Length: 584
Ligand SMILES: *[C@@H]1O[C@H](CO)[C@@H](O)[C@H](O)[C@H]1NC(C)=O
Ligand SMILES: *[C@@H]1O[C@H](CO)[C@@H](O)[C@H](O)[C@H]1NC(C)=O
Ligand SMILES: *[C@@H]1O[C@H](CO)[C@@H](O)[C@H](O)[C@H]1NC(C)=O
Ligand SMILES: *[C@@H]1O[C@H](CO)[C@@H](O)[C@H](O)[C@H]1NC(C)=O
Ligand SMILES: *[C@@H]1O[C@H](CO)[C@@H](O)[C@H](O)[C@H]1NC(C)=O
Ligand SMILES: *[C@@H]1O[C@H](CO)[C@@H](O)[C@H](O)[C@H]1NC(C)=O
Ligand SMILES: *[C@@H]1O[C@H](CO)[C@@H](O)[C@H](O)[C@H]1NC(C)=O
Image (cartoon, rainbow, N blue to C red; front, side, top):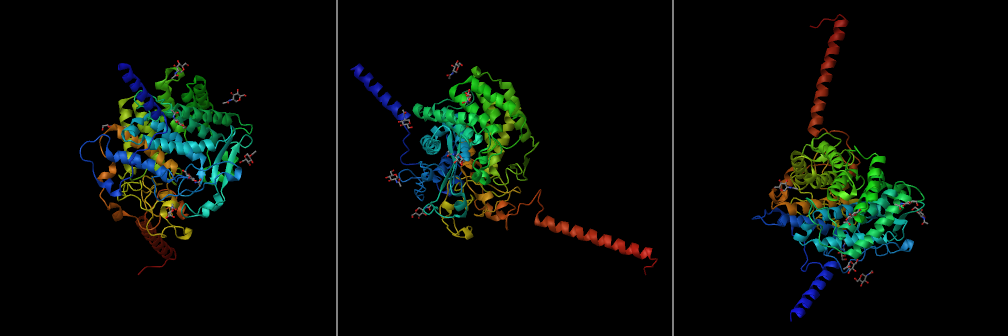
């Protein structure tokens, strides 16, 4: 009797284990983003998890589902999406269907995809309980596998990685739905003779970060446990790709170089500024995934020899250096056997963060309070600020003093609040999150239009709500115009959403307060909506330096006229005096 009972228990335990290990079953009924009007409701009571933050997390993941490429016939919550581009890779004899469309158009770009996957897996490692609490873990698993399974297909042999699929010429000229995408799509690769150190190392870093997540390998200490999607066979598979790609990056016979040297077609959209950050990151994340002291030392050596210390630039899909010190610090505090020195990495991280929170450049604050990097922020102002907020919040519990910790958290919160509506436009810059949210994201598939000469007005209203999409963001004067063709302000992209997932997860775990947008007055944007056009690349009108408003220009004109008249008057008087004439 007892043995039968025990046997039964063991059996059900085994079944449970097995279910836990398999690709997770999606919730039934599914999570669907609520109508935008829901974002204007303040939560009553102190619910944990906070339902509004849960929606920010759920919607941010939902965005990726809308970006799916390939055969989606049996797997989508996004009713207005269709299967597409199922023949990708045919030109090179491989199946490169699947994966994600990069942004508002239909290319598939490996380098920014890798950056997004790395960032999401890192966040789901540190704040994983948030995905569990909000019942989003199965969607996270689904989202990651859709990307990682494709990335594995894009890496069909040790020294080959496809870095771009699409037709850059045709795609630039195509604006329309997902059923008429021009079928002539080209697959571009890097390989042993024509390598790309950054793209190979970037993909390796994504595989390593996600392998650690799927192995349930967290940093402990102040961090949460990883999201519960452990699957050791999948983790192993990912790790094999990570190792091969790292070797490819280090040892390609063609040498170490940026990938656009080998694939010039990518240069205009996603050229990389350097491969040193990706190579260091790949070594570091692989050392963590494999518990390798020697790889950890290699990463430290790279950091030295590439002179990555002391840099103060942006953190984004291209520039990952600022994340390195944070990761080094996390690993060092977690695992003494790796041999790192925590104080060294705290110094390095805090030198970088202190400049940000004390406004010491190179970034500056917009009048409305957004952290802005001239150049990097010009084509997508929110991403650098959100990434800084993500790094600051994650690092804060490792700070050396309570004051630093508090100032990092405060600054990070200010940036997140700005993005969620605490800005001069009163707009939360996530599509579908509130009635004031952007109505015209630059997304060919969501727009419902197919007239490339009339993107803004055909149709008048965006056909589909692209719930959860973080858009490019306002200009450096905090102005947001909500014009569909204005891609620097309104485009969506895989890498724009990545830090929002991690920040939402942090806030799900940290408290019961609502995100900022619930306190916004509905309709406040329409009262302040700017007229005319922004100064940005979409309008070939990149106004340089600090701007004068129209009023300012008029005032300046008056001053110049007055001064001019005064000087003319003086001259006339002087000439008369010189000529000996007398005024009457
Ligand atoms: C893990 O994932 C693989 C797919 O990659 C799946 O076939 C398997 O059932 C999952 N579960 C376990 C326990 O490996
Ligand atoms: C898409 O997948 C479904 C099964 O999920 C299959 O029936 C269908 O034939 C596939 N379509 C294409 C174009 O591959
Ligand atoms: C998907 O197909 C339907 C039916 O043809 C169409 O109405 C819809 O616009 C398509 N979706 C996209 C994103 O093009
Ligand atoms: C290697 O990559 C380069 C650049 O994409 C390409 O031109 C070349 O054909 C590739 N080599 C092979 C053997 O496919
Ligand atoms: C690169 O090649 C050298 C020489 O064959 C080898 O010792 C080293 O392990 C390789 N590095 C990687 C990361 O594979
Ligand atoms: C990592 O390796 C060290 C020895 O280098 C060992 O002491 C430690 O237990 C290992 N940790 C894990 C998680 O495997
Ligand atoms: C968590 O909440 C506490 C109390 O509201 C706040 O002081 C702290 O800054 C928050 N932490 C993060 C990571 O936002």
